[in-house]
Image (cartoon, rainbow, N blue to C red; front, side):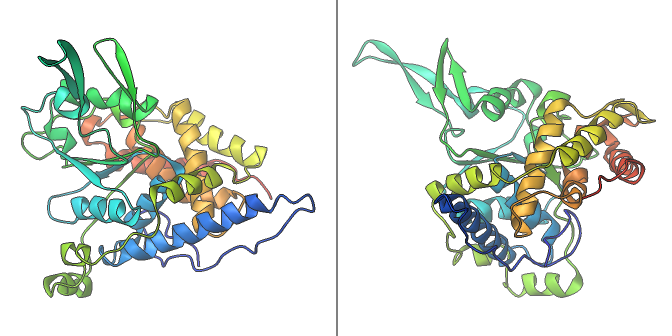
Length: 343
C-alpha cells in the first residue's frame, strides 16, 4: 500500500524490496535500501501510535527524516504539532532540543553565545539549543524577524557562525518548526528566504470523531509518548538518508519536477514562484516518498504526491501572507496542466 499523499488519508507501506546482488558483489546498496525502507515503515507505524488519524502529516514527517529536509507545521493550537515533533525525535533515537518562540527571544538564545572565562582569560563559545540532531522551534512566527534569521545559516549550511568562527552542527540535523496561522494575534510572518529553507510544510488537522474520542480516553497523543520506543539510532538514521539519496531518478522525471517549478514563476496570481532550491527538494522528497512506497526509483506519481507540501509554502501570491490556500490551488493547477512523462 502506498503512503498517503501528504494531507490525505491512507495507510503505511508494508513491503520491502527483495535483497539482491548485481553480480559484482554490490549487494550493500540493496541492503542499505532495504534498511531505509524498513526504517521508513517502522517510523510511520511508530508515529501512528501517537497521532491518530493524521496520516498525511505522518508521511510528511517521515519524508523530512529520510530526505534530510526541514519540516514546517502550520495549524491551530491544540492539534498535536509539538507532540508530532516529540514523537519523531523519540522514534529516531534522538533527544529533542526545544525552543519556545516568543517576542523577546534573541538570536543567541538559539545559536549560542561567547562568554568570557576568568579561569582561562579567554572567550568560550557556549552552544545553544540548535546543536542537536532534532530541534523543535515551537511557534516560530511568534519570534521577531531578527531571531528568525538566526536559523537561516543553520538550516542551509549546517553550521553556526559566531564572532568570526564557525561550528558544525551534528549530523543528521532536522529542524521542525511550528507556527500558528497568521490571523492569530502576536505573529510575525516568516520571510521568503526562511520559508524556502523548509523542504516541506504540512498541517496536522483535526482528527475525526472516533480518533478524538480515543484521545480523550488517553489513547494516543502525549499519553502514548511515555511508552514510545525508538525505531533506530541516529547512526542508522544517517545511513537511511544516504540510501534515500541513492534512489534512482530518470532524467524525464527530473525534468518534470523542474518544469513544475519553472511554470510556477509565471503562473497567474503568483508574485514569487518556486526557486531552484525548491526543485532540488521536490526531487529529494520524491525519493523519500519512493522509499516509503518500497521502491528504489522515482516515478512521476511520487513527485505529484509531494508537490503541494514542497511548493505551496514557497509561493507568494497576490493574497500575500494569507494566500496559502491560493498557493495550494496554484500547485494543483500546475499538476493538472503539466504533461506527465511516460515511463
